[in-house]
Image (cartoon, rainbow, N blue to C red; front, side, top):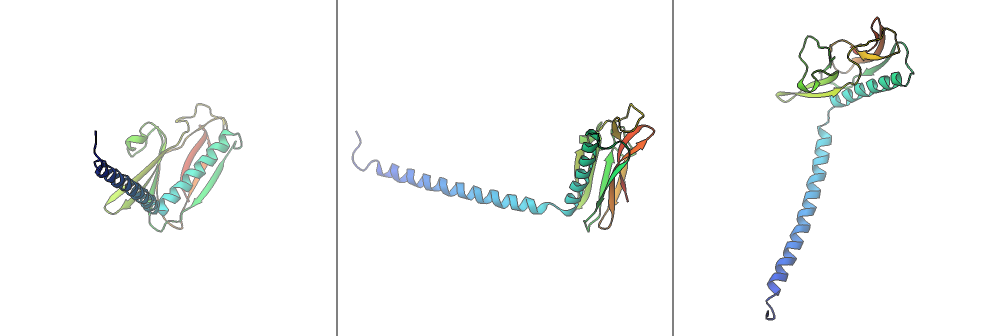
Length: 175
């Protein structure tokens, strides 16, 4: 049997722990919000330009899949970044430069730019056929040749679907 007053230290400890847990929870929420804002600021204009290029590619490929494109089509994407950056299109069939491991054997577009003393690489898989099996435009879409561009403000990149003797071909080209 417990005597009166023996539970008071336990109640005091319980209340202290409950208050500390609330404070820790608030601290984690604040740290999480700061982290979200910090990471949002890390996004660069080059990342935005690359997103616009990928968005244009998606629009063209969706229009092709929906049967809205039978011949040549293109979307010019102006570049807003003051700092130069590289965009590389790696077709699955290969090219003069070895693709990153995550792209190997697949069509892929990558963004490269300098961050302090290292190069930042962001790659996105482009889901089109590696090689066309039909020679008629509009029947199937395949990946174009390897391309590498250095871009900065005032440049543009042309995301395009072109009729070739190998069918409809998706590619990118600096303009």
